[in-house]
Image (cartoon, rainbow over all chains, first blue to last red; front, top):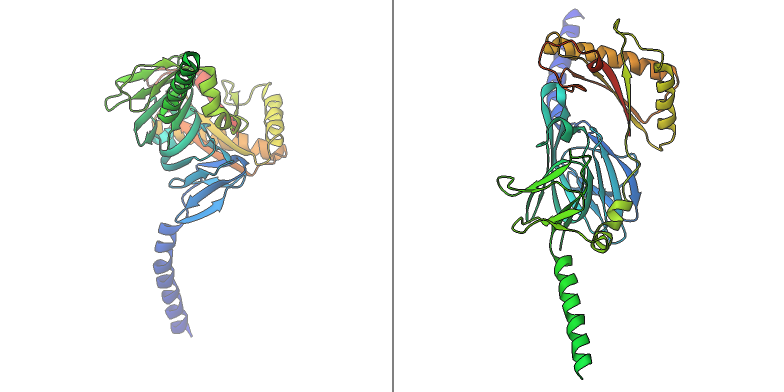
Length: 153
Length: 194
């Protein structure tokens, strides 16, 4: 009986060890913001799946945000930065870290089309080089304030 | 014949001008946040915008120009209208003994109200310290301060989609100081409602 129990315990530990590692690696990253406003056609794509955006929905690094013809979308990130999009827009949040205690401050995004209204939050106050948006025409560094950008089709 | 040709030319010119503007990708600074805001473009960040209302082609070869109200409306009306309610910040200052001052109760009530005004409120409580003491220890002190305030908010009945508790330790100063400086104004707990 004891031998069987030991065997079972060892087997369970091994199963746990094998099972936990990939589960951790594939678990969703920590949310870094959320959707605060949606009008009309607005979408969030993550890991190849595209869904209609909903108010309250979590934003994680790597997601793509997009709007259709009459769509509008507003997002608030952890440092208080705001991203608001007009119609026919698409942006990928390539990287986002707001962790002043470990000196990690960055927002990297790619605006491939449309219009973005960006209001810089604490990230820019703590590091004026923290926020950058790439576009097909080049990189825009946002040092603070409210910035409007348009990527023509 | 001539007036017609002229008006045709004018119409064509207008189309070219507007069309030309509408076609190019550009960035503008809508609000310079009292001189703290700005935009940099170019490989070396050699092109800059630092005045509200000024714009520049993203390709960065041109000079900054004033963006007309009409242009701004045509391009950004929808993106401006899509802006959600802006985050609200509240700062609790700590007394010399590390406790909360008399104004704290009222401030926490305003936090609860701000959260109630939003459909899906996310509340972040962030603890801060001054630069006195070790950096790692200060991160722990900041976290304890934030946890205490988060507990108070919970006990007051805060309803939020998410309540986050964080510490920036000594790395997010309200008043800039060198290391190892006691500065009471930097000992604080900040609450962000978004």
